[in-house]
Image 1: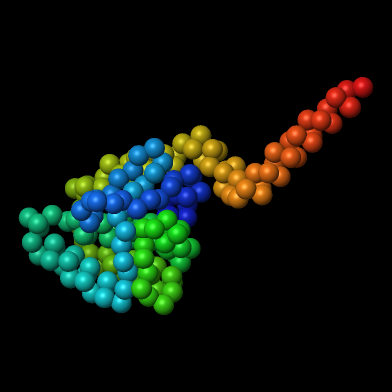
Image 2: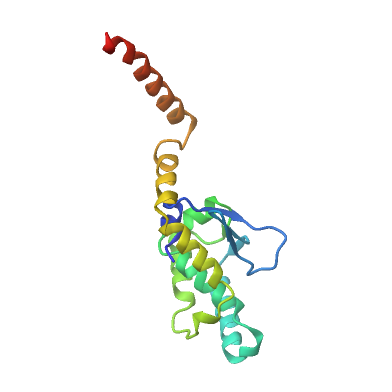
Length: 172
């Protein structure tokens, strides 16, 4: 799955999922909902221990392992952390976004598991299908590049209006 920056370029919006259990992630119509997660200096050892517990006791499920795999997919660089932080998915108690990116990239290192049994397989499938759609990418381009703030919207409307008023003069 692409990282958060690439998903945002494809038109995916991230929103915090409220009133849910921790690893509950969903994707519908270009909106990925993920519970808010606080990242501190204690996060790496806690999550690594939870993953180790799931590895030792397979009957408990692999909820933290698959959640961490998702976050590792979403976060490659500090820019991805910034995207998720601005969306309210990540709350950061570390000194910078680079540390958070390194943390998520280390979580599933040397952890072996079969992704085919992930409770997030449908989310991965839906996200990839959405991103592969040229229509969704085409639709996201003007929003991202031209309609980020009210001033750009105003200038595009003004330029279009001025250009349309010139048409009758050129026809004469």
